[in-house]
Amino acid sequence: MFDLPSYLSVRRMQVDDYLDRHLPAASTRPAVLHEAMRYSIFGEAKRIRPILCMAAAEAVGGAATSALRPGAAVELLHTYTLVHDDLPAMDDDLLRRGRPTCHVKFGEANAILAGDALLTMAFEWLADCIAPMPHAPTALIAELARATGSSGVIAGQVEDLAAEGRASDAELVDYIHFHKTADLLRAALRMGAIAGGGTSAHIEALSEYGNRIGVAFQIADDLLNATSHRDALGKNTGTDAKRGKLTYVAVHGIDESRRRAQTLVAEAKENLQTLPGNITPLAAIADFVAARKF
Image 1 (cartoon, rainbow, N blue to C red):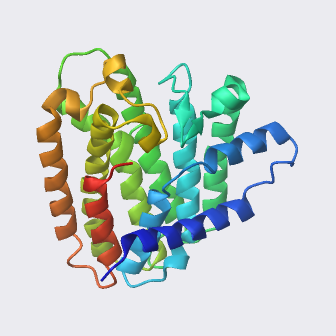
Image 2 (cartoon, rainbow, N blue to C red):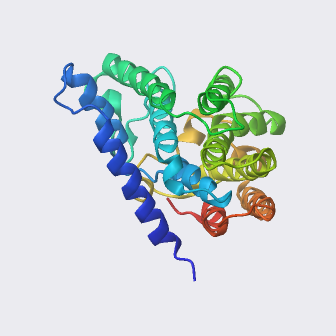
């Protein structure tokens, strides 16, 4: 029987070890910047995105290790989005990954610069990752850039901020969830499939899986913000309602949100059936997304 907690633990340790070895030391000048970068990276992080990247490589018949550096680059970029999202000009959060947010610890200016540096380093790392044929050599860079630019993650954040206090809008909340969360999860999966030597058909199957678990993941976040508590999540809860955030829970209610997340997970698992490699980890991760408590 597949043991998902053990799988996640092993993969998380691999990712953490890679990040620790390749990020600049905290003492490297300018020390405050590198300390802020490492502080933001090494909290109570699940590493879901790099783990998905590695699992996707396995699912297309490749080696998980082929996707370790691309997955670590995705984690750098994801952390940059968290650092910037937490800033006073955006969500103004005080707690992230179980401890004070970067701007609380190091000041707003250093947090902005730490996020900038993490973003830049993500693409520096990918510049050393040549995609295998028949993919273009720069395919991994292109995937991450497309997923996170003005039509991707950033678009989702812009609309999320603009939607605060607005009336219920199902189409808009779908747009926000798809771009703010699903785009990066899908990119991690596509990058893993590319690194693992997957075909175009394999990549598209994983894209559909990623679209669905990405939205389900954000719905679960909305539910946890509404129903969980700070000690369980490592960040403040109840903040979406206080800010008037346009969330799935706000639009559809708790029961319908849970039902929709479960439906998306079931559909996501169907998309895995055509893949030639080990799909068990991805199927188990999909179930975890819908049922997670943290």
